Image 1: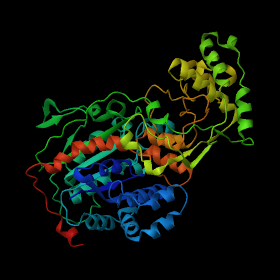
Image 2: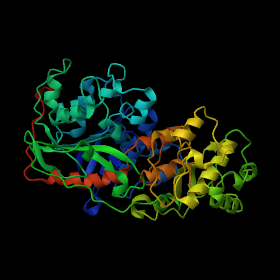
Image 3: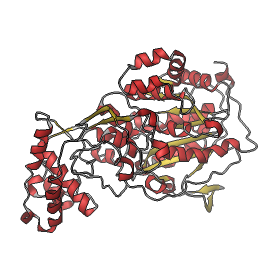
Image 4: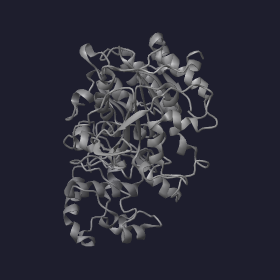
Length: 531
């Protein structure tokens, strides 16, 4: 019997994908998404499509699914052809905004999805923009105000579900900036740890809490990367707040993604989890170099290969301007000779391709039934940016690092009003960042949807930013995971997700908690059970 999972603030489903992909004998899934909740319309479409995909045994999705992702039939036709699985997916993937939808409706959905099961898993990450260091710096905030930004206390929606429904285990993810965020009353992370340890007590303090009996026994909170220290405070295990940061690149994920992830085990379950194993760093090239080669589009020019190649060849090479970068200029000359048409131009939502097979975790990524690559189309770039991208990619190729502004010829400086500050103080010094082939990528975030300047492809011949599929590979989404919506919406979904392969590794640590003997469960609230 698969363990039910409720996934809230689900995004496109990265965290849920990792758990639901964990299988035992005969490819039976160990975890099953019972309900996922997401407010964004495009992410919800992706979430529902993946739910539909999972209604079939692993490896047995219908041919119609592949016909849809290849653009041969519509999504409406796909669901019409498989009405039972489509209806189950509609029930499982719920588009709703927590904090706005009535709590009673949320509770009804959860109880219906669980079907009486008391030992289940809650996963998810409250929206993190309010906590991020970059976001707070942009807003010039040092103290967060929940009255002005409701996202500050969205974690209370997570907390409310713990208090009322008492899952056996929870996994909660957020940005590293949450460790330094604070309100007028207290540091946010310290308050979150206290509240999550005793959700019922935390919610008894809330005046608008519904009149139900709470029997949640509370939770032991664990780090997934560090064992508890021997020092104890008030009888509780001691962790430094930084012990909750997972450095993804240390655990086989091809990007330097640093996130806070908390594991909660209900107090009536006698189980202490293990920690994630460390692994060798995975270079970017191991997860993207097998994908079809593309060129960028042109955003403000007639878009043809001939025009694109001509613009790139117009880059002004003057080694005397930066004699210390003679090796970079030599590489530019070499790469200019290699510019040639790509078979697939600027790409598409589906490209026929028989060579897609990662060097890393091929079994995780690859699906031979696809017979191609999904969500692999390039952006259009301005001519001035093409020269910056080409220079940055050549610099990265020979120096194995991304150039700072001061490493660019002055004629390639962007026309930003704070460019001098970038040169003299190194603030905003990496506005154009190439992802180095031989190293893990920098963190994929939703900012990738705005422009490609921080995500320049390492191959100078392609002279472009990363595609959605390349970003998805870096985020470790399987190749048959199709992202719905516009390319901008797809980028946002990928950037906001938890890497599924990391989630899968966490799932392996969580599973034994449900196999612990004995597992003493708590009773549901009588008032809710009768609702």
